[in-house]
Image 1 (spheres, each protein chain N blue to C red):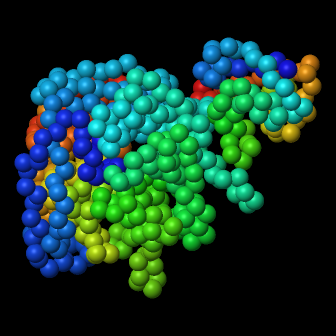
Image 2 (tube, each protein chain N blue to C red):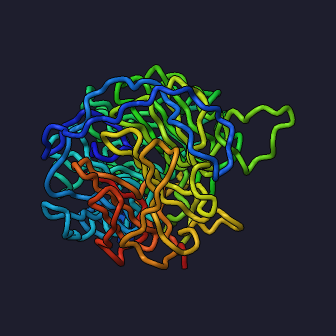
Image 3 (cartoon, chains in turn green, purple):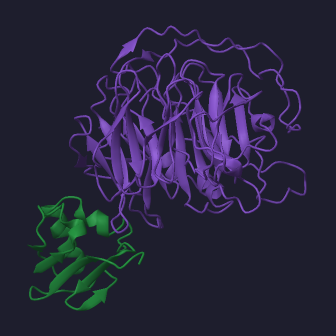
Length: 86
Length: 435
């Protein structure tokens, strides 16, 4: 599936704003992303598998808060920095 | 960074040294004085100590000094010329990241190994490591994180404090985090493991819940690996107190007797609180490891082991100044010479320069008397200096350096007697170390 990244995360992806990753859930997609770009997942998800408070994860246009959310190849995943601090 | 006393790894040789010429101050063989507070105007008592364990004086450094400056928006290097009279500010590294600690490895003679504790406003905490003196950095492949196990609910919010391991343990580093977690690396910071003697201890967990977090979080700082024994460790928590381990972190004991807790009601049975205190910064003398000092939320203290009760040497400060502040530093070759930066702890606790007149205070007798040092500092100013933002080098005339939350860096090349502003308009300064 297509994964879109805000500028905060592009140091991990050689400055690409769009990459591809595979998986049947958001968690699986993020783990695949982390295999390709080591370290990226821990910056957006903590060790309790909680999405960090100032990170927004969207599947298509819907914001999700659980990594168990099911996705398909046709979905788009967006990892975005939340509006924080004004 | 042997010059700085905030992180201890004694006996490493810095890049440019010469045999130490300074003679360590002789300990005064006098009786210990009681821990009870005395009036500020009272005549200073003799230094409460015992004959010092003999340790070779640390090396005396010479030549240019490089400061590692951590700010809320990135890390900077500030380099001096040979006589420390002019300074050059680098461009920021990790620009935009919140840098809580930037430390060079004193066991590496050329200071090529450097670690940075960082996060951003959005992204989680991590460690960056350099093997080329800060020219390039790579992220740790396994940053500090609490182990995944049933019942574990904590997650690291900040990597806050970095301490190189003992001189006999190259590659070992420790990291203190918020919430109060302790982590250890044996590969120069590439991978980190939980120190379970602290993180998994139910006894420790009970200590940490006694008072609740300080406004900045419940973070672990002032981690000291005793210069004379790699298994002997100290650490402090704001706000839980100071703790000691004699077995490399497997077991921990509170070490807070004698320390005030003005923010808690007196115990009805008249005894002291065992934990819940708010140490802001604790340091150890490199040449006399039994000598500890701490700048606490409630005063300035000295402890000379095997004593177990801290003595409030802040009572010897001028009454109109008080003894509230964040950082404290000790001379690398004289365990009796210390520096503090008092802050206003009256009324609603502004935590800025007392009466709007910035000053450093120095003691040459382990806190029994103090001297105001403000030559070169602003006549008027409301400066705040955080717990990690005061550092010293190890030159013959020790250099002192402090950074302010308003982004200004001050330096003294004469042990605090006079000061110069060496960098301005930086982001909020969180920590200063000497490379």
